[in-house]
Image (cartoon, rainbow, N blue to C red; front, side, top):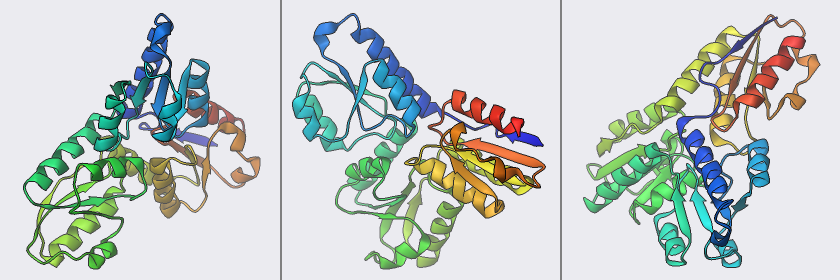
Length: 288
């Protein structure tokens, strides 16, 4: 059985940068006991093994602003790659916490685009999942005249007049093909639109490579955290190209009944999946 691993599988630049920042902060805190502890605002990645590893090194997760009331004011709070809402960042700084901003530079770029567009009076449209932390953060820079769309059909439910000036951006991990469809629909509706192609290049390459690999494989493995948005999108893309696509979190989820009649297995992984897990899955699949 041939096992093919996607070249782009695993940590993206933004996630690797954030995890490194968390580890550096934990190491620094070992010699600065008076500075409290290190926390990440939300899980730094949607991967349980990475979170456990960070916890063992003294990096803890807080899930809400209310939780910050019970941690030492001299603590360090790390903003993960998704970013946080603009007003929340201001409040955390006012409380006296030391903030390490590990927001992905590509996400920060979107913040600047939508903030400038809002100042110019444009209506801001964000293509993405309205409940995703990245999108919530982006929208905080867009002001009240903004909306989130997940597909072309959502555009028909917006109260935007033809010819109105709008700005369209996308969540960095949004499905690129779906984004192109939304852009096409906007052009059909006749909006005076500024289109920013903000789907991360690494995400686009990962999705395109996954689609190609899945079209050639008899079975496809997608590795990622169950809460990982980009991993779920990879699964959808692979499932559309290969019926026998399986979503797993670790090698323990593999099933030897999956390989009957399989000659080629493709493996890809979301941006929150460390190399150690990918290697372990690859090794175990080769045993079957």
